[in-house]
Image (cartoon, rainbow, N blue to C red):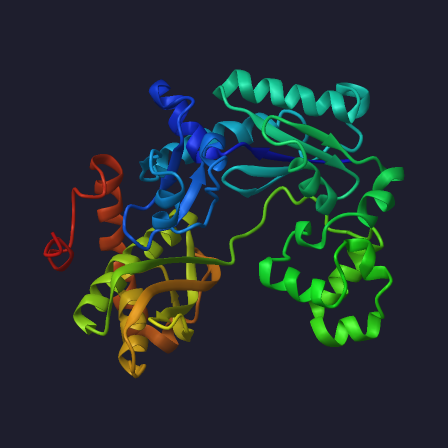
Length: 386
């Protein structure tokens, strides 16, 4: 049996926890610019139709009396760390999948801890006692069903799908409730006459695979209660990225390059925290008409240098012909390898040495910012923004 633990309105709940005056109020966490989106909404705000990923301006229209708060990621990560450590007391097989949710494989733990429901209730009790927050627990024979179960009785709920009930549950499960099926895909499937996951079994498999490809194959498997994905305690990060939606669309290369510089610093800092280097750098752009493009290049020597990342990303930007204004810009690093991995430095000696020197500077800056805060040391170019 597998449990899916999902914290209730996590960011908003932490804000209400830290500031008791916010309890019972419509707390909406998100950026403060016109183009920002809602990161989390308290259940009080959800009654007004406010949801995660909704544009902030729409949230203000739906809930004008809402309390709008900028995210405090450092604080959320602190609380998340406590929760994940607590979960490891119940099973060695704990897979965090985001800052506020995780899977736990409790197979074989029944003799020691009791029935799956008892274990789920105990986890809820321990989390509430440890961090004074509520969570919802889904229990099922697979990860796929456990995730759906955790959403059945929110907030502060618990729902179990027993192995002998799985097929019956799937039969009537709305297709839009299936993880990975968004609004657009869900509407497309409904147009095909598929409104529940059970309908997938009755649809010609060949036609479904031709229309949906790999996602069609996945749906066929799920409709037959097949989900062999296991709970993996640790998954190596494959990439690091960041992006920013501009307050005003622009083609000004100077402005875009400043954003790239700040983002390259953030990506480099994350790589150094992971003790990893990246082989591929990616530039992401979204135009004013919402057309999105990415441009990537694989560099000679893997790097964790913010300067090298910026140099490559700005080079990709320079090569791309801007025909329309940009509304979003981002930088990513992928193809991660351990920082200590040896490379054939003699082939790329000058580039590797230059990158290494910048990495030494970056680590020195990291030490200062870790002790005194991100604003303690700042590039003159970025300081000009203020």
